[in-house]
Length: 541
Ligand code: PEP
Ligand code: MG
Image (cartoon, rainbow, N blue to C red):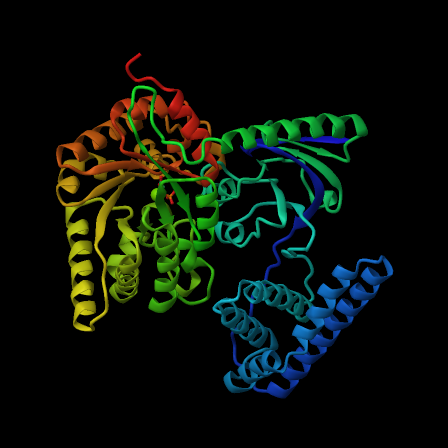
């Protein structure tokens, strides 16, 4: 038995087997290759090797009477023999005169995209299999091993570190817990990991690839990982896990209840999401709406930006499924730690202060208008609020509103329905907080992003793990800006929400309620604990 110390990111405890993810470094050569037939031969050879490996795994599973496992590997072989998939790769190699690796990358992703757009959720899941096979074929071609292997049995995902887009690709049904050697409390990767509602421990410095395949207990509450636990320890954690389950069950009785203090002050309790599929968890946890849909992740998962149609379908799915509850959708906040290679953004010294969020949108108008049109079209299907991120001046807001109006007029001319919608601004820079009066006069709502507001007020990079002890969202300068913004919003009849991580910090709930906040938006898993906290408060006492 060995104990690894780390830092708690998400609470809870689990027991399981560790799967260590090593990011494969795929540098795909995009140069021209004249000998296409030789590249096709390399591709076919790699395909054969992966198929043989799958056959061997199927045989081993059968020998262990694991018929279900055997079937999965046989189905992988069938996918690798699919003529449509093979033709797609070969056509790319031949017509574009590119390497086998390039053909595999583009061809497999194309097929995965096609499958993902099908309405049948069972078939949609096959796209994950295709991407897993793509990685295996690439590894064979490039002589790599490792990489994400989202196996069938639930496991503890270990890694040196994970990017936001890697966390966005995690299938929560298969991952019991996340443990990282590195990691940082305030990055988007961490915010997404917390949203998965599973125990997470970061900065476990002794974690290494040697832990791969070992049984372990992850104690997210105390930030500890216990490798190969003895019987007594397993017994102790079985009791803890039962207590946790009982507590989660007890919260369920708050479903359907109002979020109101003892003295009758009601507040909107919303959830933050980053993916249309999160709506299920939002409804399970009975949030009264979505206070922040980070649309960014739609832009991170592909190699090209999503079309208007693709965006419209995602936004429509969310507003329709949540209707009549309201949904705040934030326009893209990419750049900084959310890099999108197809935008070819230049390297920056200070990316958090650089070309990101609304600055990209207002610089690349086609890109922005495509998103605005998709949002407006989706507004016909539910209760939509459009939110602009990283606003620092009234002029930026007015430009956004003008473009929104232009898109609306365009859609009217095309006889495309647009619903009613509200417009809001993220207050996540000191500039926005200081001019919140002006911004409130021009918007329907303000939403305070405490993560960036802390970063920019304190001039502390939220990405830098060495600065965690200085990154203090409770700093009086941050709290004062929250109070100012709520008051400014109310002077102009604007609703004011808080959607950064501080919204879920129950040590702040009473202060926020006393300041008169209209809504708090938190990870779906925090909704019921926060409702419990609010129902215990008596602001008149
Ligand atoms: C924030 O800055 O508080 C916020 C909610 O946005 P993000 O965490 O996505 O930057
Ligand atoms: Mg932000």
